[in-house]
Amino acid sequence: MIRSDHLSNIDQSILLKVRNMLFLVFLILGFIMATWIVRTPSIRDILNASIMQMGLVLLGFSIGSIAGIFSSQKITLKLGADRSITLGLCAALSGLITLSIGSIVSSIWIVSCGLGLIGAGIALSEVAVNFLGSHIERNLKTHVLTLIHACFSLGTVLGGVSGVILMAFNVDFIKHMLIVFALLCPITIYATTQLNNAPGSKLTNQNRQSNLIDTLRRDPQLIVIGFIVLAVALAEGTANDWLPLLIVDTYKVPEYFGSLIFIIFALTMTIGRFIGVRFLNTFNVATVMRVSSMIGALGILILVLSNNIYYGLCSCIMGNWGITRFSSRNVRWCWLGRKCSDKNQHSSNDWLYRFFSWSSNVRFRW
Image (cartoon, rainbow, N blue to C red; front, side, top):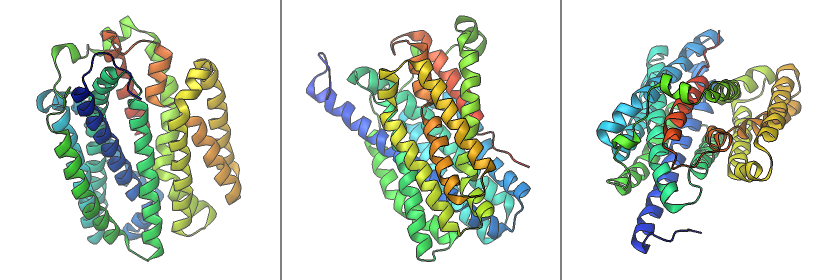
Protein backbone atom coordinates (compact mmCIF):
# COMPACT_ATOMS: atom_id res chain seq x y z
CA MET A 1 0.00 0.00 0.00
CA ILE A 2 1.38 3.41 -0.95
CA ARG A 3 1.51 5.89 1.90
CA SER A 4 1.87 9.35 0.37
CA ASP A 5 0.16 12.63 1.05
CA HIS A 6 1.89 14.70 -1.61
CA LEU A 7 2.28 12.52 -4.67
CA SER A 8 -0.37 12.74 -7.35
CA ASN A 9 -1.88 9.60 -8.79
CA ILE A 10 0.13 10.17 -11.99
CA ASP A 11 3.39 10.49 -10.04
CA GLN A 12 2.59 7.37 -8.06
CA SER A 13 1.81 5.36 -11.18
CA ILE A 14 5.13 6.39 -12.76
CA LEU A 15 7.09 5.53 -9.62
CA LEU A 16 5.30 2.20 -9.31
CA LYS A 17 6.11 1.37 -12.92
CA VAL A 18 9.78 2.18 -12.35
CA ARG A 19 9.77 0.11 -9.16
CA ASN A 20 8.31 -2.89 -11.00
CA MET A 21 10.91 -2.55 -13.76
CA LEU A 22 13.67 -2.53 -11.14
CA PHE A 23 12.19 -5.74 -9.76
CA LEU A 24 12.35 -7.19 -13.27
CA VAL A 25 15.95 -6.02 -13.80
CA PHE A 26 17.14 -7.76 -10.65
CA LEU A 27 15.17 -10.84 -11.61
CA ILE A 28 17.08 -10.90 -14.92
CA LEU A 29 20.43 -10.40 -13.18
CA GLY A 30 19.72 -13.23 -10.74
CA PHE A 31 18.69 -15.49 -13.61
CA ILE A 32 21.96 -14.77 -15.44
CA MET A 33 23.95 -15.39 -12.27
CA ALA A 34 22.38 -18.79 -11.62
CA THR A 35 22.61 -19.83 -15.28
CA TRP A 36 26.37 -20.22 -15.22
CA ILE A 37 26.72 -21.19 -11.55
CA VAL A 38 24.63 -24.35 -11.89
CA ARG A 39 26.80 -25.39 -14.85
CA THR A 40 30.20 -24.96 -13.16
CA PRO A 41 30.76 -28.75 -13.22
CA SER A 42 30.16 -28.65 -16.98
CA ILE A 43 32.57 -25.74 -17.37
CA ARG A 44 35.20 -27.70 -15.47
CA ASP A 45 34.65 -30.77 -17.67
CA ILE A 46 34.70 -28.80 -20.95
CA LEU A 47 37.94 -27.06 -19.99
CA ASN A 48 39.34 -30.17 -18.33
CA ALA A 49 40.36 -27.81 -15.53
CA SER A 50 41.79 -28.56 -12.12
CA ILE A 51 40.51 -26.87 -8.95
CA MET A 52 43.32 -24.32 -9.22
CA GLN A 53 42.44 -23.58 -12.85
CA MET A 54 38.77 -23.24 -11.92
CA GLY A 55 39.90 -20.69 -9.36
CA LEU A 56 41.51 -18.74 -12.19
CA VAL A 57 38.34 -19.00 -14.25
CA LEU A 58 36.18 -17.72 -11.39
CA LEU A 59 38.70 -14.98 -10.71
CA GLY A 60 37.52 -13.42 -13.98
CA PHE A 61 34.08 -12.90 -12.46
CA SER A 62 35.64 -11.33 -9.36
CA ILE A 63 37.80 -8.93 -11.37
CA GLY A 64 34.83 -7.94 -13.51
CA SER A 65 32.68 -7.33 -10.45
CA ILE A 66 35.29 -5.17 -8.75
CA ALA A 67 35.86 -3.17 -11.93
CA GLY A 68 32.12 -2.68 -12.34
CA ILE A 69 31.68 -1.52 -8.76
CA PHE A 70 34.49 1.03 -8.74
CA SER A 71 33.66 2.44 -12.17
CA SER A 72 29.91 2.54 -11.55
CA GLN A 73 29.80 5.98 -9.94
CA LYS A 74 31.54 7.74 -12.83
CA ILE A 75 29.49 5.85 -15.40
CA THR A 76 26.24 6.63 -13.60
CA LEU A 77 27.19 10.29 -13.23
CA LYS A 78 27.84 10.52 -16.96
CA LEU A 79 25.05 8.36 -18.37
CA GLY A 80 22.43 8.39 -15.64
CA ALA A 81 21.08 5.41 -13.71
CA ASP A 82 18.69 4.33 -16.47
CA ARG A 83 21.37 4.06 -19.18
CA SER A 84 23.83 2.52 -16.73
CA ILE A 85 21.33 -0.25 -16.05
CA THR A 86 20.97 -0.81 -19.80
CA LEU A 87 24.76 -0.92 -20.25
CA GLY A 88 25.14 -3.38 -17.37
CA LEU A 89 22.45 -5.71 -18.68
CA CYS A 90 23.99 -5.69 -22.17
CA ALA A 91 27.40 -6.55 -20.70
CA ALA A 92 25.97 -9.40 -18.64
CA LEU A 93 24.11 -10.86 -21.61
CA SER A 94 27.17 -10.56 -23.85
CA GLY A 95 29.03 -12.53 -21.20
CA LEU A 96 26.78 -15.52 -21.90
CA ILE A 97 27.79 -15.41 -25.58
CA THR A 98 31.46 -15.11 -24.63
CA LEU A 99 31.08 -18.12 -22.33
CA SER A 100 29.70 -20.11 -25.26
CA ILE A 101 32.58 -19.08 -27.52
CA GLY A 102 35.13 -19.94 -24.84
CA SER A 103 33.55 -23.35 -24.36
CA ILE A 104 33.59 -24.07 -28.10
CA VAL A 105 37.33 -23.40 -28.32
CA SER A 106 38.00 -24.76 -24.79
CA SER A 107 39.80 -21.58 -23.73
CA ILE A 108 40.13 -20.86 -20.01
CA TRP A 109 40.91 -17.21 -20.73
CA ILE A 110 37.88 -16.60 -22.96
CA VAL A 111 35.59 -18.28 -20.43
CA SER A 112 37.14 -16.16 -17.70
CA CYS A 113 36.56 -13.03 -19.81
CA GLY A 114 32.93 -14.08 -20.27
CA LEU A 115 32.50 -14.34 -16.50
CA GLY A 116 34.24 -10.97 -16.19
CA LEU A 117 31.65 -9.39 -18.48
CA ILE A 118 28.85 -10.94 -16.45
CA GLY A 119 30.40 -9.73 -13.19
CA ALA A 120 30.98 -6.19 -14.47
CA GLY A 121 27.47 -6.00 -15.93
CA ILE A 122 25.79 -7.22 -12.76
CA ALA A 123 27.88 -4.87 -10.58
CA LEU A 124 27.20 -1.81 -12.72
CA SER A 125 23.48 -2.53 -12.95
CA GLU A 126 23.26 -3.28 -9.25
CA VAL A 127 24.76 0.05 -8.18
CA ALA A 128 22.55 1.97 -10.62
CA VAL A 129 19.45 0.07 -9.47
CA ASN A 130 20.30 0.81 -5.83
CA PHE A 131 20.62 4.51 -6.59
CA LEU A 132 17.37 4.66 -8.55
CA GLY A 133 15.63 2.40 -6.04
CA SER A 134 16.60 4.75 -3.19
CA HIS A 135 14.88 7.60 -5.01
CA ILE A 136 11.74 5.51 -5.54
CA GLU A 137 11.79 4.35 -1.90
CA ARG A 138 12.03 7.89 -0.54
CA ASN A 139 9.14 9.12 -2.68
CA LEU A 140 6.82 6.15 -2.17
CA LYS A 141 7.69 6.05 1.56
CA THR A 142 7.70 2.26 1.60
CA HIS A 143 10.35 -0.47 1.49
CA VAL A 144 11.62 -1.00 -2.05
CA LEU A 145 15.32 -1.88 -1.93
CA THR A 146 14.83 -4.92 0.28
CA LEU A 147 12.28 -6.34 -2.18
CA ILE A 148 14.56 -5.51 -5.11
CA HIS A 149 17.35 -7.63 -3.60
CA ALA A 150 14.84 -10.36 -2.88
CA CYS A 151 13.96 -10.37 -6.59
CA PHE A 152 17.63 -11.07 -7.38
CA SER A 153 17.47 -14.16 -5.18
CA LEU A 154 14.18 -15.15 -6.81
CA GLY A 155 15.90 -14.84 -10.18
CA THR A 156 18.64 -17.22 -9.04
CA VAL A 157 15.97 -19.75 -8.06
CA LEU A 158 14.30 -19.49 -11.48
CA GLY A 159 17.66 -19.68 -13.24
CA GLY A 160 18.61 -22.75 -11.23
CA VAL A 161 15.30 -24.48 -11.94
CA SER A 162 15.59 -23.77 -15.67
CA GLY A 163 19.12 -25.17 -15.59
CA VAL A 164 17.98 -28.42 -13.99
CA ILE A 165 15.15 -28.76 -16.53
CA LEU A 166 17.55 -28.26 -19.45
CA MET A 167 19.99 -30.76 -17.94
CA ALA A 168 17.14 -33.27 -17.65
CA PHE A 169 16.74 -32.95 -21.43
CA ASN A 170 20.50 -33.40 -21.92
CA VAL A 171 21.01 -29.85 -23.21
CA ASP A 172 24.72 -29.14 -23.25
CA PHE A 173 26.35 -26.08 -21.71
CA ILE A 174 26.75 -24.10 -24.94
CA LYS A 175 23.13 -24.51 -26.00
CA HIS A 176 22.05 -23.69 -22.46
CA MET A 177 23.81 -20.31 -22.59
CA LEU A 178 22.36 -19.51 -26.02
CA ILE A 179 18.82 -20.46 -24.97
CA VAL A 180 19.00 -18.20 -21.91
CA PHE A 181 20.43 -15.37 -24.04
CA ALA A 182 17.55 -15.69 -26.53
CA LEU A 183 15.01 -15.82 -23.69
CA LEU A 184 16.29 -12.81 -21.78
CA CYS A 185 17.00 -10.47 -24.71
CA PRO A 186 13.37 -9.40 -25.37
CA ILE A 187 12.67 -9.14 -21.63
CA THR A 188 15.73 -6.94 -21.20
CA ILE A 189 14.70 -4.70 -24.11
CA TYR A 190 11.25 -4.28 -22.56
CA ALA A 191 12.61 -3.46 -19.08
CA THR A 192 15.23 -0.97 -20.28
CA THR A 193 12.74 0.74 -22.59
CA GLN A 194 10.35 1.27 -19.70
CA LEU A 195 13.17 2.66 -17.52
CA ASN A 196 14.29 5.20 -20.12
CA ASN A 197 14.28 8.71 -18.58
CA ALA A 198 12.93 7.35 -15.30
CA PRO A 199 12.52 9.99 -12.56
CA GLY A 200 15.60 10.20 -10.35
CA SER A 201 17.96 8.72 -12.95
CA LYS A 202 20.27 11.70 -13.09
CA LEU A 203 22.77 12.30 -10.31
CA THR A 204 23.15 15.82 -8.99
CA ASN A 205 25.74 17.42 -6.75
CA GLN A 206 23.62 16.49 -3.75
CA ASN A 207 23.87 12.82 -4.73
CA ARG A 208 27.65 12.76 -4.95
CA GLN A 209 29.44 10.99 -2.15
CA SER A 210 32.38 12.34 -0.20
CA ASN A 211 35.70 10.52 -0.27
CA LEU A 212 36.55 7.52 1.88
CA ILE A 213 38.66 9.41 4.47
CA ASP A 214 35.91 11.96 5.13
CA THR A 215 33.39 9.16 5.45
CA LEU A 216 35.43 7.25 8.03
CA ARG A 217 36.19 10.38 10.04
CA ARG A 218 32.52 11.22 10.21
CA ASP A 219 31.44 7.63 10.89
CA PRO A 220 34.25 5.40 12.28
CA GLN A 221 31.68 2.74 13.21
CA LEU A 222 31.64 1.84 9.52
CA ILE A 223 35.02 0.12 9.93
CA VAL A 224 33.57 -2.38 12.40
CA ILE A 225 30.45 -2.88 10.31
CA GLY A 226 32.61 -3.34 7.22
CA PHE A 227 34.61 -6.17 8.77
CA ILE A 228 31.41 -7.89 9.95
CA VAL A 229 30.00 -7.69 6.43
CA LEU A 230 33.37 -8.83 5.04
CA ALA A 231 33.20 -12.12 6.95
CA VAL A 232 29.63 -12.83 5.93
CA ALA A 233 30.15 -11.78 2.31
CA LEU A 234 33.15 -14.08 2.00
CA ALA A 235 30.93 -17.00 3.03
CA GLU A 236 28.10 -16.00 0.68
CA GLY A 237 30.37 -15.23 -2.27
CA THR A 238 32.27 -18.50 -1.97
CA ALA A 239 29.06 -20.52 -1.69
CA ASN A 240 27.54 -18.83 -4.74
CA ASP A 241 30.40 -19.81 -7.03
CA TRP A 242 31.61 -23.11 -5.64
CA LEU A 243 28.54 -24.84 -4.20
CA PRO A 244 27.44 -26.98 -7.21
CA LEU A 245 31.02 -28.03 -7.98
CA LEU A 246 31.73 -28.71 -4.31
CA ILE A 247 28.65 -30.93 -3.97
CA VAL A 248 29.44 -32.88 -7.17
CA ASP A 249 33.10 -33.47 -6.32
CA THR A 250 32.72 -34.11 -2.57
CA TYR A 251 29.69 -36.39 -2.60
CA LYS A 252 30.21 -37.93 -6.07
CA VAL A 253 26.70 -37.09 -7.26
CA PRO A 254 25.46 -36.12 -10.77
CA GLU A 255 25.60 -32.50 -11.91
CA TYR A 256 21.85 -32.00 -11.62
CA PHE A 257 21.99 -32.94 -7.93
CA GLY A 258 24.52 -30.18 -7.26
CA SER A 259 22.20 -27.80 -9.09
CA LEU A 260 19.28 -28.89 -6.92
CA ILE A 261 21.31 -28.11 -3.80
CA PHE A 262 22.06 -24.67 -5.25
CA ILE A 263 18.34 -24.12 -5.91
CA ILE A 264 17.57 -24.92 -2.27
CA PHE A 265 20.38 -22.57 -1.27
CA ALA A 266 18.95 -19.78 -3.45
CA LEU A 267 15.38 -20.45 -2.31
CA THR A 268 16.44 -20.15 1.33
CA MET A 269 18.09 -16.82 0.54
CA THR A 270 14.98 -15.62 -1.28
CA ILE A 271 12.71 -16.43 1.65
CA GLY A 272 15.20 -14.91 4.07
CA ARG A 273 15.37 -11.64 2.17
CA PHE A 274 11.61 -11.34 1.80
CA ILE A 275 10.97 -11.80 5.52
CA GLY A 276 14.27 -10.41 6.83
CA VAL A 277 12.91 -6.93 7.49
CA ARG A 278 10.30 -8.35 9.87
CA PHE A 279 13.03 -9.94 11.98
CA LEU A 280 14.98 -6.70 12.11
CA ASN A 281 11.88 -4.68 12.99
CA THR A 282 10.77 -7.15 15.67
CA PHE A 283 14.06 -7.96 17.41
CA ASN A 284 17.11 -5.99 18.42
CA VAL A 285 19.49 -5.69 15.45
CA ALA A 286 22.54 -6.78 17.46
CA THR A 287 20.66 -9.87 18.70
CA VAL A 288 19.65 -10.83 15.17
CA MET A 289 23.25 -10.48 14.02
CA ARG A 290 24.65 -12.59 16.86
CA VAL A 291 22.15 -15.41 16.44
CA SER A 292 22.43 -15.36 12.65
CA SER A 293 26.23 -15.48 12.76
CA MET A 294 26.14 -18.54 15.02
CA ILE A 295 23.64 -20.33 12.78
CA GLY A 296 25.65 -19.48 9.67
CA ALA A 297 28.97 -20.55 11.21
CA LEU A 298 27.47 -23.84 12.40
CA GLY A 299 26.10 -24.55 8.92
CA ILE A 300 29.48 -23.91 7.30
CA LEU A 301 31.22 -26.12 9.88
CA ILE A 302 28.84 -29.02 9.21
CA LEU A 303 29.35 -28.67 5.45
CA VAL A 304 33.13 -28.78 5.85
CA LEU A 305 33.26 -31.74 8.25
CA SER A 306 30.36 -33.90 7.07
CA ASN A 307 30.61 -36.66 4.46
CA ASN A 308 26.85 -37.21 4.35
CA ILE A 309 24.91 -35.56 1.54
CA TYR A 310 21.85 -35.00 3.74
CA TYR A 311 23.91 -33.30 6.44
CA GLY A 312 25.42 -31.23 3.65
CA LEU A 313 21.93 -30.19 2.53
CA CYS A 314 20.97 -29.17 6.07
CA SER A 315 24.21 -27.23 6.43
CA CYS A 316 23.48 -25.28 3.24
CA ILE A 317 20.08 -24.26 4.58
CA MET A 318 21.49 -23.30 8.00
CA GLY A 319 24.43 -21.41 6.59
CA ASN A 320 22.37 -19.49 4.08
CA TRP A 321 19.64 -18.71 6.59
CA GLY A 322 22.25 -17.13 8.81
CA ILE A 323 23.88 -15.24 5.94
CA THR A 324 20.64 -13.75 4.64
CA ARG A 325 20.02 -12.02 7.95
CA PHE A 326 23.10 -9.95 7.09
CA SER A 327 21.70 -8.43 3.90
CA SER A 328 24.01 -5.50 3.11
CA ARG A 329 21.04 -3.20 2.75
CA ASN A 330 19.54 -4.29 6.08
CA VAL A 331 22.80 -4.02 8.01
CA ARG A 332 23.56 -0.47 6.93
CA TRP A 333 19.93 0.60 7.14
CA CYS A 334 19.11 -0.78 10.58
CA TRP A 335 22.48 -0.57 12.32
CA LEU A 336 23.24 2.99 11.29
CA GLY A 337 19.68 3.93 12.20
CA ARG A 338 19.52 6.89 9.87
CA LYS A 339 16.69 8.03 7.66
CA CYS A 340 17.17 7.97 3.92
CA SER A 341 17.02 11.74 3.88
CA ASP A 342 20.25 11.98 5.92
CA LYS A 343 22.80 13.24 3.40
CA ASN A 344 25.68 11.62 5.31
CA GLN A 345 24.13 8.21 4.80
CA HIS A 346 24.65 8.41 1.04
CA SER A 347 28.41 8.47 1.55
CA SER A 348 28.36 5.79 4.25
CA ASN A 349 26.11 3.52 2.23
CA ASP A 350 28.25 3.88 -0.87
CA TRP A 351 31.45 3.00 1.00
CA LEU A 352 29.88 0.03 2.79
CA TYR A 353 28.27 -1.22 -0.42
CA ARG A 354 31.62 -1.12 -2.19
CA PHE A 355 33.24 -2.93 0.75
CA PHE A 356 30.53 -5.59 0.72
CA SER A 357 30.74 -6.06 -3.03
CA TRP A 358 34.54 -6.30 -2.99
CA SER A 359 34.57 -8.83 -0.18
CA SER A 360 31.84 -10.98 -1.69
CA ASN A 361 33.97 -11.33 -4.81
CA VAL A 362 37.10 -12.61 -3.05
CA ARG A 363 36.67 -16.18 -4.31
CA PHE A 364 40.07 -17.05 -5.72
CA ARG A 365 40.91 -20.54 -4.48
CA TRP A 366 44.08 -22.53 -4.98
